[in-house]
Image (cartoon, rainbow, N blue to C red; front, side, top):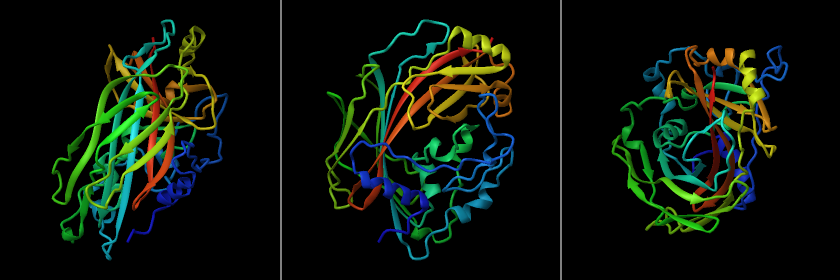
Length: 361
């Protein structure tokens, strides 16, 4: 019997009504506090994570030192009835193999680097947050961060800590074998190999699917269909299935010469094309001499074709004053919910990225 679903899983079930049709899933978001911090003069409002309570997680406070070991009992307390839940996700990422330099002419690429992960988790006696942190299936950034806000990236995947030994025999985390898994993008088929999950926990076992750095032809203006085919497990846990989605339009992120001049106004202006109703996710990685320095910051921005970020506010979230450049990784994400066996509300996540190197001096 399935465990009672969390609000997040209920939203996934609502989205599943569209089936595997490739339709994008939309989620309600907290519009945030209605005070004088709301967008001014076109600037992106950047706040600490405690301004927003995730629909499925606790409120956070930036700068607070969490005693994770003290919180682990509540975060991983087994269900007294031993009921189970199931989580499934196939995550596809298409991104350029190299960064583009904002100071150079824009050149369209006709191929992309493909990364695929797929995991189907059977869970008993463990909290969903703990499981997501352990198996690499985090809640997507745009489902946690309100539009027009930024947070340190490491705040998006807080590890709730190890469970206690209490009722250890009730805990079970099995990543189920889905059989042979193939991803088809346009006319290109890619077989995704499986790997055994490391025995990090005594109650954790199974397999996951990983494919990295496979180059596939995808024209810049193309939005090909993506088809996932799985042969199914050797048991009845996960029958054969087919799921479909569509690659979202490319962003084509760029910074004009005039926008670069805006750095002297202590603002970073980025532009992109094909604005849509869905927000985009932008990760800002500080660089010094081409090497990472400081902490990555994640922003969720309305897809209006332009974003303006206050650099002084970014520095309060981890952008070092000595950074001489940033790497921007912008993503459009399309999510399709699908059902397979008792894995209700599984996700096909298709993420199309663009990367841009932007000098700050």
